[in-house]
Amino acid sequence: MKTNKFGYREFCPEPIYPYTEKAEILRKVEIPYPKNMVMDTLIISRQPATRIITVSTTPVPILQPPHPTPYLVSNPSLAVGLTASTVFIDGTVNSAGNTQATPLGVANYMKMHFHFNITAITGTWDIGAYTRDPHSGNWAISQNLWSGLTTIGTGYDFIGEMGLVTDFAIGWNPTAAGSMTFSVTGTLKEGTAGAGTGLARTIFIGGRNVTPGSGYPLFEGKDKIIYPGSNVEIYAVAYVDTLIKVFTL
Image (cartoon, rainbow, N blue to C red; front, top):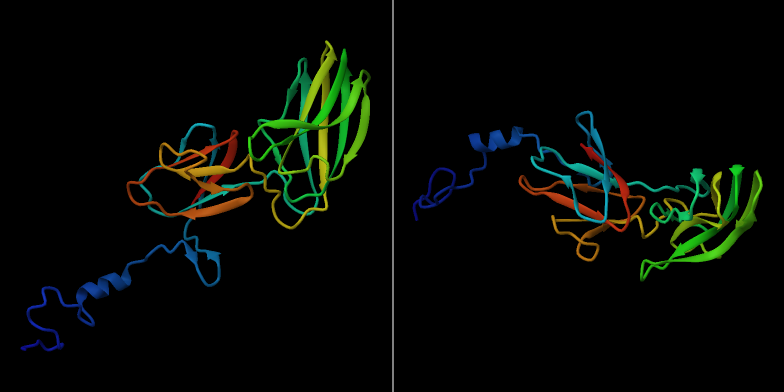
């Protein structure tokens, strides 16, 4: 059969020549690889833009076209490292409440130390610790840390493994009507390296109708590089309001 000078048959509609002008153009095009797969290093060729987005219990858009570059979506942890401290509340209350809407992930920790500091108080108050059932998502009180609080002062308590499951919260309740200006802090100890991943602060990524059951999970303390198609919209949903960071690379 007759062939051309490069050895390709003439009936071939678009032969792939070893070297053509088209090949030279493609060679010069810079393809924005989002990650070096060998070195596991992000390649950033410009100043990254950062957005902080609140993901709630209904789907919210996190990535909208156009998409000229990849994104790094980060679900930051509230507790990182072998030892971590957090402030559960610092303010004035006059009714029962808790921090279940902003739970602390404690799956990587074995022990927690608590301090309370009351600067003004009327009535009588109890402060307790709550843990979240990973199956139902419901909360249960694990320990009553302080009971019958009526005076200004500072106190301390300690819990070991009791109540440190996956997600943790503090609650307060008046047993006699009044108000209280106070703070409660916690110090986590004997953690494993990395983030204190909880389940309540997981976000789920998908389309505009994404649910926790259908979305791709991005756990607390984790991040993911996403490079959507040109017209693709990305949404996210969560069990509780969760702040995430989106970096345009």
